[in-house]
Image (cartoon, rainbow, N blue to C red):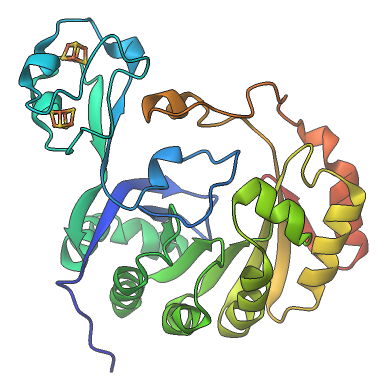
Length: 305
Ligand code: SF4
Ligand code: SF4
């Protein structure tokens, strides 16, 4: 019997209930902070930093100035395009406490495994009725691998199925620690081309491809491909990913996720500029030809997923 460290702490930035897209059955998704990749299309820019960070939503601000007065670090100013100077902000939360409209929030809070499980227990009935469970997402849960492992172990001890949405980017030793406790992995494979991969995500793909094999030996895998014009939106790119997926054990399905500017509004809120503003969303009908390439290889393919 595995011992579980319920006091292990990590940084969680969201828990989303009743999801039906991130693993089998009805699931609760636990979003963890921290990601070693910086994909240009990332829909959760607030997740990339490992520590809690402040978000400012200009549309909710009524300009009352209470937060500026409350901040002892001089981090807030209307002269600043993003309102918050993140080099000065200590994420103390004083401004959040006095803001009457919720324009300021802090994303990410420290939780113990016991606190996470206590929240998840509220959904245990839905997990049981739907053969669902818990999905770890992020960010990249491999960054906080000790915390992730303990949550997964605790979920399995409750009899809940575990799923993990991951980039697969981590030390191979970390994969061996985490994936024995994962029933189903949703593994992003973004490109087989190392140069393009590095340009668009900030990291080389060699470690991801190496880990993919290890992960597929340890859990059931669905390969997920964000389809991005100007990056991998081509028959050649998708065929190469499909061919790689076919060589992995326990791969049942490939999900093609057409580009959508989801989360682009959050970039301003975390003090950044969204680099892909001019890119049009891809329609379902614009990736059906790519899906056919995957199914012709004998894999099942879902658009969206
Ligand atoms: S969280 Fe604290 S340091 Fe940061 S802007 Fe608000 S009051 Fe200032
Ligand atoms: S307290 Fe809230 S509403 Fe008032 S200026 Fe600050 S962010 Fe805007």
